[in-house]
Length: 65
Image (cartoon, rainbow, N blue to C red; front, side):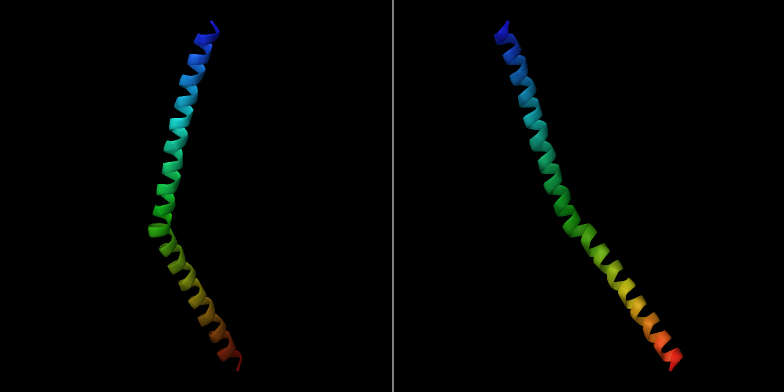
């Protein structure tokens, strides 16, 4: 009886291990995806926002002068 439980437990553990590895690979892959796709977009957006802020600040300064 104990052997059966042990075998089932091992099978479950193997399943968890496999899904864990799969999950880990997915995280790594999505990290690569983030680096290649997501971050450039964010950087560009942030840069654009910074430029807009700079222009606004310059515009305000020139209007007050």
